[in-house]
Image 1 (tube, rainbow, N blue to C red):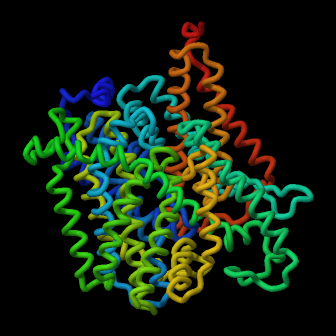
Image 2 (image 1 turned 90 degrees about the horizontal axis):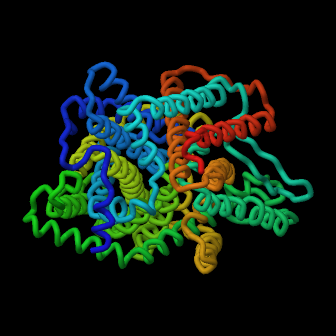
Image 3 (image 1 turned 180 degrees about the vertical axis):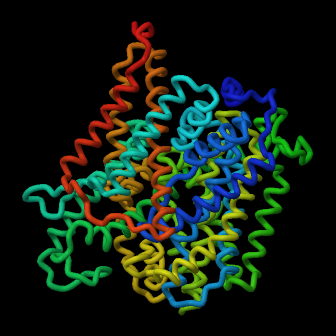
Amino acid sequence: MSNNSKESKFVPYVPASKSLPELTVTAIVLGIILAIVFGAANAYLGLLIGLTVSASIPAAVISMAILRGIFRRKSILENNIVQTMTTAGEAVAAGAVFTIPALFLWDMEITQGLIIFIVLTGGFLGVFMMVPLRQLLIVREHETLPYPEGTACAEVLKSGEKGGTSAKLIGIGLVIGGVIKALGDGFKLFKTEVETGITNFKNAVVGLDAFPALLGVGYIIGPRVAGQMLAGGLLAWIVIIPMISFFGGSSATAIFPSDVPIGELDAWGIWDSYIRYIGAGAVATGGLITLVKTLPILFSSLFATAKSLQANKGKLTAGPLRTEQDMPAKYVWLGTIIVILVIAFSPLTDVGIIGAIAIAIFGFLFVTVASRVVGVVGSSSSPVSGMTIATLLIVAVTYKATGFTGTSGMIAAITVAAIICTALAVAGDISQDLKTGYIVGGTPWKQQIAMMIGVLASASVIGFILILMDRAYTMGSAALPAPKAALMKILAEGVLGGDLPWTLIFIGATIAITLEFCGLNSLVVAVGIYLPVHTSAPIMIGGFVRYFVERRAKTEEVRKERVDRGTLFASGLIAGESLVGVLIAILIAFGLQMPDAVVIASDLFSFLLFLVLAGVLWYISNKGKKRNVS
């Protein structure tokens, strides 16, 4: 009862008693177009560098510009539907490019039908499995799970409604973030990656990706979470990497899994050959620990939701209010069962009953973990690939135990991993979208339907894009390395060929367990281990800015006002970089040659520029009304 009374205190921007145009034809058409565009751009980026760009905030900005600026439509809920559908393109692209190119690397004859089947089933499972979790993660834990991109996107949408100062803060951040991204990664005016070694400390490296979006994410998630992420990064880059370098540096022979002696590897080489396996073990274990810790409240929430839906006799509602209406449970579970059965018996794949059962089990387990972890660290830092690796390892071991080995076994294992990866990416993105909808007052079932339409639209073209990229650049080449899919291929070959560094996996697992006993969030720290420290460092700087802004406030009113101002500006930084990042990807995809040489190749310049940007974030946050200071 106490939970319900607590939930009832939150009033969304558009109250439940008010109805606005939402899942309209205009919103659906625009959402489909943007989902395809952002999906194509992110597919190229993922194949090139193993990363994708968040689409929710850019989509919100674009939808406001088109719907409000051109069509003169003023429904914030329509804009929310468009951004929800657009994120489906990003999620489908991530699920596809992180796994499916492994099939190309085996020189298989890949059909569009197979690719569409994989991402479509994975995407639908991601939506279905997230629906029962909305009450738990989005509603009950509204105050404890920030969902940084979702919250930022809500601020963008609300600022478009309010105009005035809020819109200006978003606009300023958008311009600054976009300009920095364009000058750095577009025109190569300065370096966007800062890195330095430590004197007399071999292969100990600290670095920083000077990206405005990471600064903004750090501000939104706050210093505690950012600090634990950085702790994981520092553990990997100034403890474990130097230790491996010291103890293995004198060996003249290569130590598995590297084919190069440790003494010839730099910090990046050691990270690539060893730390990623340790990080994968830590992320998988941290995710399972997080899952076990949340099982009691998870099951109580699921039972309560099922009870409520049964009481409403299958109506399209999980409660009397518009803002509480999810897809009906009977359709959710029926859809899930049908998808699993189709996967098990489809002639397009050969995963069999074992693969389908694995997808059902790990889909639910890891969707729960993914939906929660993005609430803490955001979609950009979500360890989707880490959980996909864990799934791949377990499924491959199971296949090997049942005698399903060789090329067919490896292909089946990758197919299962690809479906799970897509499900995790979609579930993480719709979690952010539902957070946005919860804040602005969207109707949950309409967002869930919109996400499924976006998945369908994106899935219909992603196969064409991957095949086109392979024919133009060749998967695995220097022009299109597909780094994460290459790792998936290595792991599948390792397990089913008996060649996997299990010791490194177990080291990561024991690190996660140790961190949990230390009272830390093992999953957040594990994410820091898995990602380069260059990603965690700028997030921590954003967290520091948030810390000093809150510490300087004299009253709760002042604190809230300043944090809100900073969140608006940080949201603009994320939006600006994301928009320009996608634009750069589109230009590259259309054949525009970007500069190769950096004009100002100074780490110090880039670092100082990033600190100046952090100072601007601090200044704007503190520029509150004087009358509020006590």
